[in-house]
Length: 90
Image 1 (cartoon, rainbow, N blue to C red):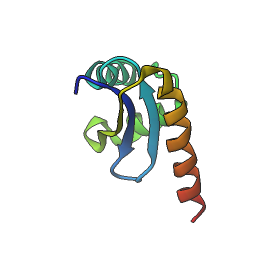
Image 2 (image 1 turned 90 degrees about the horizontal axis):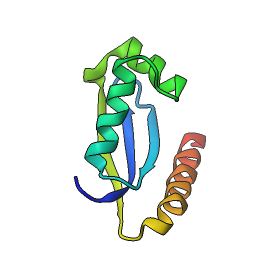
Image 3 (image 1 turned 90 degrees about the vertical axis):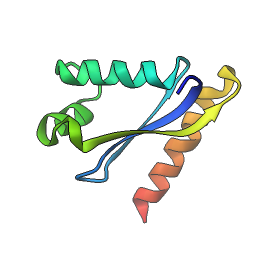
């Protein structure tokens, strides 16, 4: 997990997915999320509340897309967020 790009954090209990992007390694980004969630100060209150309710062992981190060009990471994140929104409508 050394590249950058788009990832998802999924609560396996609820199936709810958080989409994010990183311009640092995936490993570093996941470590930062876990640090904040474990200390109860994550910027996403929905993710924090689910983490607190279901526990760390109910969350998985997966790479959605490795991006070769750091300049398009945010563009690709928007693409994945749009897909997520369309799937939620079904």
